[in-house]
Image (tube, rainbow, N blue to C red; front, side, top):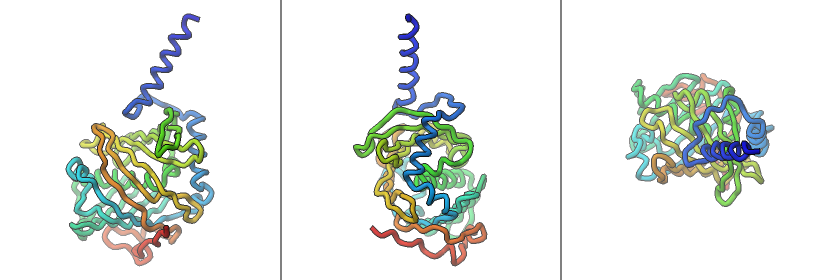
Length: 287
């Protein structure tokens, strides 16, 4: 009997350490069944059966940076080029092409497994930091859009992480460990805030280990204004805040266009020049 309080204190300390202000860093070797089941339930709530029929996506974003973002991470933000964007995603194997437009012109990015290529106004660059930053951005934006479906990739480990409120909705938290992580990171950790009632994914909080300059930093993105398109509930409003090493608003953007299954292949997504099938603007979302 004397050991029981000590065990309770130990367990409380372990749980509190993983529900603290920064994402839990304890070793988690295998998924907890409760956490895995909750992620599966969220995938179902977002339209998992319909999502399984999607082979490729064409999306369009428009957004605005807070003043701190470009100053805090100028290479990652790349605000002269990252204003609006058209993006094409082939889900398996995951190939993502981005065409960003800003005051500096057009930035093209092509991301395939283990590789990244970037061109500014038609001229390719092989700068390593620029490449690592672009890879991190591509993978993070795929996570924000795909939500719980992003975590279908092999090697992901899940554990319960407490509860929280997001937009007044009570959420269960699941920590997901991604190996490999976002961009060129060996590992990243993501907290999924899953609405206890609807099972929708309301927020993600993530580490940014893909760049030396962002290692140790954390951001969260709140997902709002879900709209059903082709049977899937997609977030159309994204609000990003820096959470560590300080708390500030960073970026707000909206999904303006989305359509699925154009029949895209890698041949359609060359770095500088997309085919006509890929280049056609994404179908506008009606509100």
